[in-house]
Amino acid sequence: SEMDDGKATLSVKIGVDVGTSSIKASAFSSQTGLPIRKNISAAATETLVSSFAYGVNTSEQGKHVEQDPEEQWWRGFIHVLTDLLNQLTSSSVSESRELSKIKVEAICLGGQMQTVVLTSSSMEKALRPAILYSDTRANIEAKTIEEAFSGTSGIKELTGNWKGSASCLPKL
Image (cartoon, one colour):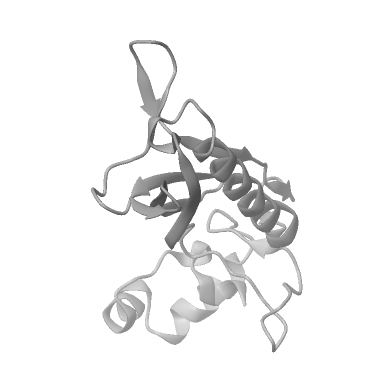
């Protein structure tokens, strides 16, 4: 920790997981790389974590699986960061005693795979709900692509990856 007017600055790196059912965040010491822990009793601690749960929107017998990036992911991101910073300044976090400030050195994001998010040309706004990996409405489109590439082996040879209607290309 750095010193600022006799009080320490806690430098952290924050990891954020944007999952299918929730967004979670945790803080790690920039000095040690270890997770920041909070006291839950006189003798026990646990890793400092913040989470924000949300659901998925489904229709058509579960074939359509979508989420609203702004309402779910962005709102959840702001919630977990605000909550995490509040927890970091609480007295239950041993590193927070005598702190003048918290310095966030980095934020690392991890997220869902093969989710399609169509945005405006400025990339400031999603044009529609995100289509998740588990969305399988594009069966006809996937079959058309497979036929054009002489089956799934032709696509896998070219791209290294093919999951049929769960892939991004058929969803476009």
